[in-house]
Image 1: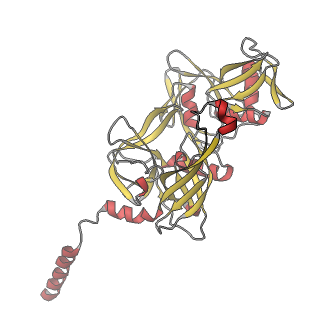
Image 2: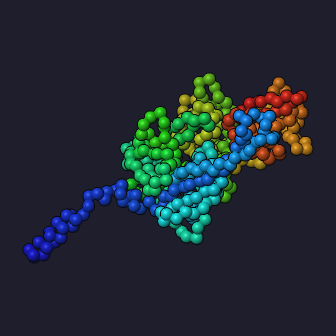
Image 3: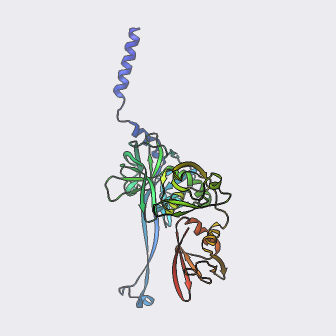
Length: 412
């Protein structure tokens, strides 16, 4: 028996002698996911006019030339199921060609499935007759402050670059030109070119999409929570874009920063959940809201069939409820404009013309709608879609009247 124990002791000592302490949890997590991370290279063709006479327009017809430039950009991404690649929208925006370089170092062309510019998420489909390993998606609603995370990507085209850090905020709200976005904040360094790469935990699960660096500070990185992708991915695959979920409520903003519910749509889930006119919307998904724009920005990542958590204030009491978002009713945008402003529109030849208006000081009968939010309007379907996509926000109408063009802001 002594010899057996001695023999086992020798084996134990040998194993510990040759075992490496360098292979820690970070190394193991990287090894499990590294083959899912890709380099993305895009090509964009730019045509620019040029004439040798200091760009004097007088000479354009005689000596003008058109130069063609090819620009390239680099980014990162990662495979999810069915060979679909996730990346940031700005990485592939306006690209003429998209190339993917996976772990095998071969270059494959890819095509854009669809995406959303405001959420900065795009889905690509690789053109290859082979199956690539998919990353496992985690749950960004289940994060810990101080949790170790790993940012992976291909900065400057350098494959499999990694940085480590900890989560310092699970829902950091960052203001931008388009309103605000909600990020996971980390001190894991996110370099240029890391955009679109995964932020993973020690279980090798993707919990975020590397998206931005707060340039006014050092070492602060931001990632879009992966649950956003999980909500919108089926939408983008099916519709190439994200449809808006219908809340069924209209609001008024008061001077104290409250959102007072002014109307609850009949037969809506909001009405069925017990929400009433005069209630105050306090928060959506644990994010306090104090403006209609805030509601608009939060809801843009919640398509139909999403369930959202609401906190409603009624007098001095708070009520929690869950609400299933549905699709917008047919022509709902045009219906609401008629109810709020008495506006009705009709198509005459190739133009959309105001048929009726209860706000003649701003919009008159016979006005021609040229653009809405800088998009040309050719039919009522497009007008209705723009209203829906900008619900709870300001909508800018470019109107032609008596030889002049006016810009009118209307809100919902």
